[in-house]
Length: 63
Image 1 (tube, helix red, strand yellow):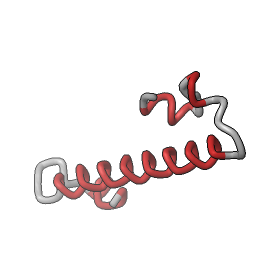
Image 2 (cartoon, rainbow, N blue to C red):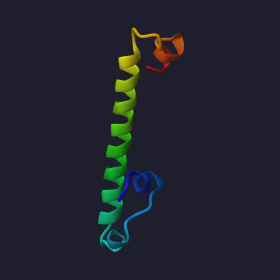
Image 3 (cartoon, helix red, strand yellow):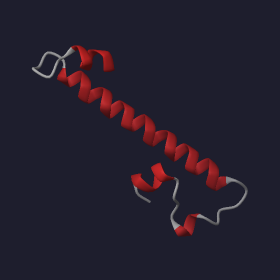
Image 4 (spheres, rainbow, N blue to C red):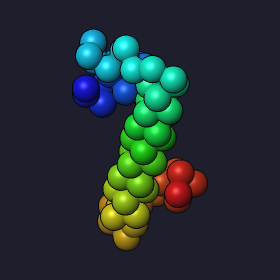
């Protein structure tokens, strides 16, 4: 399963047949972790731009 699969909601063929809602829970957790990871990476990248020539009012607004 790739990050693209997580974002699009597609699932690996072997995992589609899980029973009792385990699939939905697993998918929701994986999606949430991916979103948090993406947000933290973006925040880290923006913070590292502070004090550099890339430091602009727009950058500070994003933070």
